[in-house]
Every structure is written in C-alpha cells, then in structure tokens.
Image (cartoon, rainbow, N blue to C red):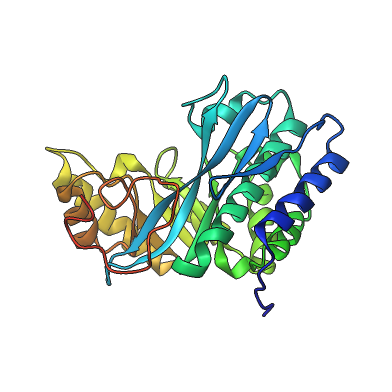
Amino acid sequence: MPTETTVPLTELVHYFNKRNRLVCSAADEDCFAIVEGQVQARFRGNVLTTLFQPVVERASGHVIGHEAHLHVVTGEWAGMAAQGVFLETRDDQELVYLDRLARTLHALNFLQEREQHGGFLALNIHPQLLRAVRGHHGHAFEATLARCGLTPERIVLELSDDGFDKLECIRGAIDAYRERGYRVAIDNFGRHTACLDRLEALAPDVVKLDRSLIGHAGHLSLAKRVITELSGEIRRLGAQVVGQCIENPLQIQVAQEAGVDWLQGYRLGRPAAHCLPVVRLRPREAA
C-alpha cells in the first residue's frame, strides 16, 4: 500500500494552478487560493469551497469519516446547492472539468484536516461524468490524491443510480474505481428504484438509503419495517448500509433499531468548514 506523505499546502496550490492553466485554455487566472486556512476555487466568476459533514458509526457512536459538499461562497450562484451548480455547466466538457475541480478542492481541504481527524473522505461523482468519460475511471484523480499525500483507500466515491442508465456503464466504472483501491457507495438508493438484483450486479461497498425511506412523524413504524428489511438484504449482498438525512431523535431511533451501519444527517452534524474529531458524539453535541 502506498504511504501518505505531506506536501506544504501552498506548494500544492501552486502546482494545481499551474496544471489548471495547462489543461484549460480559458484559465487566465489562478484557480485555487488559500483564504484563512481553507482552499477556495474559482469557476466562472464564482468562489467555491468545501463543507464537511460527519458520518457516524451506529454501533460505536464514533465519527468515522466525512462527506465533502461543494459550497458557493460568493458570485452569481452564492447559496445554490451543488446540484444546481452542475446544472449551470454549458456542456459535458465543462461538467467533467467542474467535477474534477470540486474533487481536487475537497482533497486539498481534507489534507488540512486529516492529521487531526483522520477517517475517510466521501466524494460525490456526477452521474454525467460516467457517460462522458468512457474509460480509465479514477486514474486522473488518483494522481491528484498522490500529490495531496492521500491514497484511494481513504476515499469513498458516491454514485447515484436512477435505475435507467445502462447497467454495464455504471458497473464498468465501479469495477475500475475498486481496482484502484477506492470504496464505492450507491447514493440515494430507493429514490427511483429499490431493485436488489440491480444492486447485486453493481456490487458497491456501501449503500446510502434515500431520505424518503427514513420516515417522518406518523410513518416511522412503516419506515422501520422497510429499512430493516432493506438493510438485511443489502448486508447479505456484502455492502454496508447508511441511514442519511436524519434530522430528529425519532429518526435516529428508527435507523438504530433497523440496524443500519452508519448514520448521517443534521441531527448528527451539519456541513461545516472543518471536520469533527473521530470521537464519540454525546447526545447534546448531536443536537
């Protein structure tokens, strides 16, 4: 397994700015900058940075990793959700560029956090990237990680599957990522389809249940039955199960009693500029 080495952040930012100008002819200024200890990126006049949301292990109550979220600090898209930012891209080429830019940004910011907090870093892959890039999935990003002193084993790549894309396309990308050492998660499972045969064919390492499954007041008993059955089937396929978008104590109880492996949501920690320590969360801290 490759060892992780530390390169000064200023040196890394200089390197990625230089590389960005080589690969993007429209880049007439530095893309990355360090502002108050955190890396920011420029994209079409907007300033982007990273927010980290904790992922908690149900059995121990420990924070075991963080998911990175793209956050627009200033510009025309300020306050826009990441999904909306990607909808603003003009074509596939620009979307691929933004997707890779965001993951590089998150890796640079995680570099500042990992020494104190450790754990894994979860990164979202835009579905269109799998259609636009036909092969060598994960190769370019592995080189980026190596520059940041990170290995693929520290990364969980999250892919959404709406159930309509060709199975071979998604499975091919998942196989390529896993061969390089990444773990792969299927995000929002149950939103469009809950086909276990398709999930078995994709063979992810982690399955994140859609927010619609966690239930709300008056429907929690049904949510518990559904999640309990799904969790058992998903675990039978060899994947870990994540209950996400947990916003209140009753939803935590449902997820815990249903036996999911990991928990994520505002009740456990909102996206923030810095990672939480990998320690046990007390109930008041999770409020």
